[in-house]
Image (tube, rainbow, N blue to C red; front, side, top):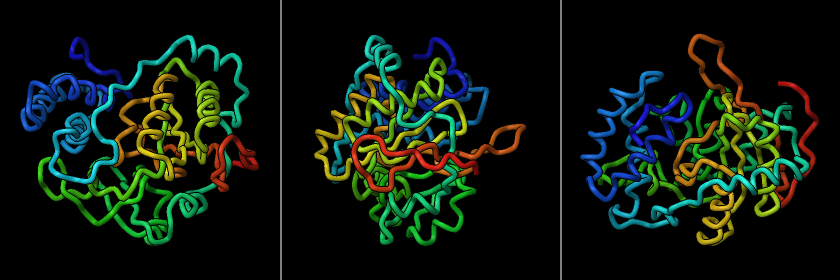
Length: 293
């Protein structure tokens, strides 16, 4: 895990894997200090915030938390990608969206279908700049935000694994409403990722696919009424197809649909909505009118 530095775009997953490898030998505080030193020495392509390190630790040490409601958060050993299955899907599957064409929708059009008006929504303009507000207060500024938690929050703050008050923590999530599958293998083009997303849409209702503004797509699946066991089984299927296992984190950031991603030395990139199904039905519905933004 520490044999070589993480490549750009892989730091988030690298942090979680290292924390997961240390959770039986170091306590969370020792792991935090160790990861801080690792980031200072090995991660040179971008800054890593303390919050990002803490998120990785929270996910890796989630079975050792304080008494709390548990939404299936015990660490799970997700399956490795199955190259044979992936190759077959890429060959045989007709995608329900092309992975490149925008629907032309903005956040104000899609978020009211994903969250109720009464829901508290956690958003961020940066990784360590989170805010929780009612949906109505979020909508006017969504197009300039970078991140969102794909599940509704239960309050303005909660108790994290360290016993401290925290805005974005697992214990402050009301329910797991969506599972997000992210495919960030640089060998997979976005049209190829769309085929993998389509295959998963035969198992769970696909409600949205978002271009991250980088190399990956974020596919939102509606699992609100599923048992935690069925939610985990579905996510295991996603991991078999190469999805990032850290996206299981119930309070983890995903890209704001239609939001804005800053890029060093370049203009910000719009996180385009490539597919949206407002009916929240299983399978693939028509992608949209394909108009630009």
